[in-house]
Amino acid sequence: MAEKKIQTKRIKRNINGVLLLDKPLGFSSNQALQKVKWLFQAAKAGHTGTLDPLATGLLPICLGEATKFAQYVTNADKAYIATIKLGATTTTGDAEGEVLSTSPVSVTHSQFSKVCQQFIGEISQVPPIYSALKHQGKALYTYAREGVDIARQARLISIKSINVDGFAVDVAQISVTCSKGTYIRTLAEDIGAALNCGAHLIGLRRTETAGYLLPNAVTIEQLEVMSIEVRDALLLPVDSAIESLPKVILNADTTYYLMQGQPVWQAGKIAQGELRLYDENQHFLGLGFLQDDGKIAPKRLIQKSA
View 1: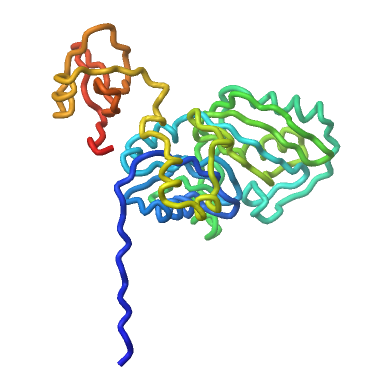
View 2 (view 1 turned 180 degrees about the vertical axis):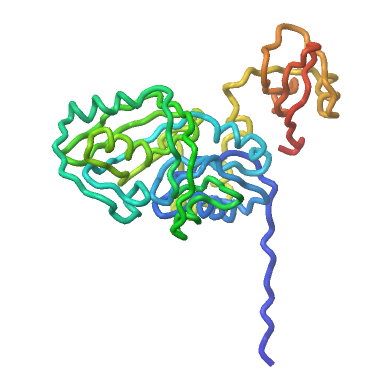
C-alpha cells in the first residue's frame, strides 16, 4: 500500500503591528497582503488602500489588532511619483490597456508645468471604469471587461501639490500629494486632455501615506530570507497608524472601567474628537472620544494581549 502523506496544519499566530511593505510590480494589493500574511503566519491581516498591479511602493499591512485602525491609513493623504506618457490614450488610462488614440506632441516643459498647476486644489474627478469601485455589488472593472460602460459620478478630491521632476519630449515624471480617493491614472488622462494631446500613466510609485515613508518599507524578497524573529522586529506598533490624534493617559481605576466599556471621567482639558488612550504604563488601550457630558467614551479598544 502506498504510504499515506501526513499534512501538518500551519499554525496561525495572533501577532499585532504594522508592516511597511514595498509592493512589487505585477502584484495586486490582495496578493501582496496574502503573501505577507503567510510569511508572518498571521491569523488576521488587512491592507490599507489598493495599489494597482502596475503600481509599486508603500503599502502598509496591518496585522492582528492593527486592522482595527487600518481605515485611518486608508483615509490619509498619499504621495506618489508618477510617470506620464503624452500623445496616447488607452482603455485603462495606463500602460496595461489598449491604445485608443494617438496625437503628435509639441509640448514644452513650461507648458506642461503650467497645466499641472491647474489641477492643484479641490477638483472634480470621474473614477476610471477600470477600478475596484463597486456598482450593484460588482467591481467596475468586471463590467469593463465585459464591455459594459457604467456611468460614474464625479467625486471631489484634493490635489495638495504637483511637482514636475522630469520632462523629455513626450514623457514626464511628477510628484503628487493628494487626498484619498484620487486616481493618478485619471489625473494623467486629464492633464493630457488639457494639453490636447492625450496621455496615460506608464509608472506609479507610492512614497508616503499617513506619515509612513517608503524608505522604511521592506520588499517581499527581503522578507522571504528573514527568520520569523527578524520579520517580527520590523513591525511598527499598533498605534503608529493614529499618532496624529491627541493622546490621553488614564490612571489605573479609570483604565479598568474604560476597558469594561464604560465612559470615564478624566481630569484636565481634553481635546474634542477622537483620542488615543493609554494606561499609566503607556500601554495603548484603543480609541475613545469626548462626550457632551465631558466623559471619555470608548470607541475601539484592543485586546489586552496586543
